[in-house]
Image (cartoon, rainbow over all chains, first blue to last red; front, side, top):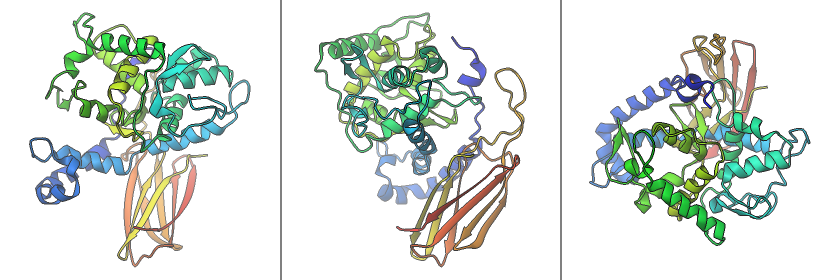
Length: 292
Length: 105
C-alpha cells in the first residue's frame, strides 16, 4: 500500500536552506576544526583520528532539533481527551503501569499480558488508541506515516513517549518466552537474504565502511554502532522535514531491498526491533534524534 | 492557532544568544499535494524580536525560508532575567507571540 508514493517517500527537501547554511558553516568550520574540535567535540573525531566535517553540522542540528516540536505536540495529544470515547492516553500502560512513562521506552519491545503479544512503542500506542480511545485500527495505521499533506499523531506521540526515557540506557529484557522468540525471529530476519535483490539487512549493515552514495551505513554487528542507532529513534529526518519512527525506518529499509511492504506494527517489524534494541542495550537514549 | 515556538535564550558575558525554533509549514505555493493540486502559499511574512520591550530585530521573510525554521539573534548588554518576546505574522494573517526569560549560561 503506497497511495501517495511521491509525496510520502520523497517529499521535496524543504529544509534546503537549513542544509545549505549548515554546509557553509561546516566548510568554514573545517579550517578551524583541527584546533577547536579537538577540544570541543570529541565525537567529531573519527576512529582514525581524522576530523569528520559532517559532525559539525550534525552537532548544530542537534542543538536546535526540530524534533522538539513533535515532542511538544505529542505531549499535548497524549493528555488531550480524544477519539470516539473522548479519553486521554494517560491510562495507557507501556509496561511500567498505566501512565508511567519515565523509562518505559527503554524497556521496549516487551511482552504485554493484556494483548498476549510482544509490542514495540508504536504498536503499543496503536493498541491504546484503539482499546482506550476507540479509534479504528485501520485509520491509525493509514495515517501513521505523515506526508507533507497530513501530520501523524503517531509520530508526535512516539516522540513524546520516547523522550521520557532520555538519558536512560536501553535495557530490553528477554525474560518472557515470547520475547526470546521475537528476538530469535528478528535475528533470523536480519541475516536472511530474500527478495529480488537477494539482500538481507546484514548485507549493508554487517561490515565496516559501507555506504549508499555518501551516506555511511552503520555496522550493526558492532555494539557501539548499533547503540548509536537505537539511541536516536524516533528521529527528525532533515530530508523529510518530519520525525520518523523505527517502524518507518524498517519500512523504508524493506522498500530499499524491494521486499513487499512491511505492515505497520507487524510481527516482522517488532521482531526486528526486538533484535536491534536488545543488541543496542546500554545505549543512552536521546530521542528524538536527528538523522539525514 | 499555531503551535508554540521553542525559544532558548542564554546570556554569556553581556551577550544574550537567542535561538528560536518555529513550527510553521512555510508552503512555497509550488508544491502539489497527493491529488496533484497546488498547495497555496503559506509562509511567515514578518517577524519581530523584542528585548525588554525594545525591538531588536525585524524581518521580512519569504517562502524561501525552510519549513519549521530556526533562527538566532544576539543581543549585547544583556543579563539573566531579561525578557525576550518573538512575534511572527504569516500571509494568512495567523500570528503567534511567545515569551522567554533569559537564563544564565
